[in-house]
Image 1: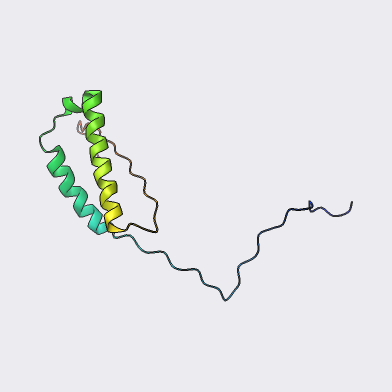
Image 2: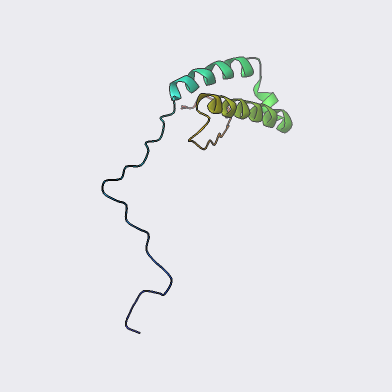
Length: 98
């Protein structure tokens, strides 16, 4: 057999030069940032670091914050995006943060 192509396997069709795909919506991140600042201030205002060291209490707080952020993201733009929310809490002992 001189052909190097396997039978039954085809390369994907090339896109047409004149065809345009629909442009995805742009997510309004400024609206979400404002919400997150208010959420963190109200949720974590009276929480101490020792409460986060308790595994169950820390997990519950992080789950609550993550769930509320995801709900807000779905309110802002319910279609056209897949959302992943990662929640992390670290102790600040004088080091720089972001």
